[in-house]
Length: 124
Image 1 (tube, rainbow, N blue to C red):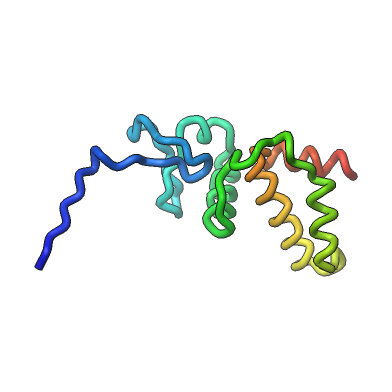
Image 2: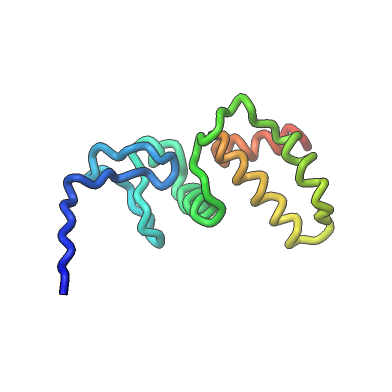
């Protein structure tokens, strides 16, 4: 039987939200349900509820916060793309899918959930 030894000092710990390297593991936020670390910076810019939401969305759909430049983000363009998928806004489940897709793409462009909500309010 072979035994695998891992030297933890050589492992780079990455933030589950922004993928930046965590320099001081003692200051890492650990989700209550997900064993994914969050760096100090993301810990300060996201609320407790947002951390769980963002970690779940990025774990399920992939990517990371600020993967793309925020300058290229347009919620109106996202809505146009999604409207071509023929999802009905009268159906609550499909409306939820639309919201999840929009929020996920906003996160990839460095838009926080609070900023996303403000952008939606401007449209209404």
